[in-house]
Image 1 (cartoon, one colour):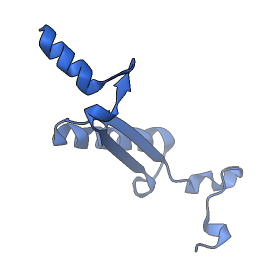
Image 2 (cartoon, rainbow, N blue to C red):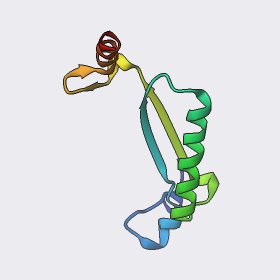
Image 3 (tube, rainbow, N blue to C red):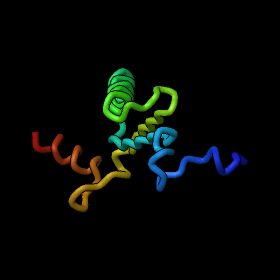
Length: 88
């Protein structure tokens, strides 16, 4: 376990430079791997540039959620996609 002095303290402004930015993104599954990689890089760059965070401290996690596990308006994205395909 890390000594207490090494653990970031968000209640102390002098320790904020050690805080590790953690960004979580959820997207519907099915995107192109290159698009996902581009998103990860763009978010990383934005955090680095806006928060002046060192590259090695930035964590970005992108989770792909199956269309059957994401709902909006009481219907899953899979159901909405099927309905759209039937309509047109």
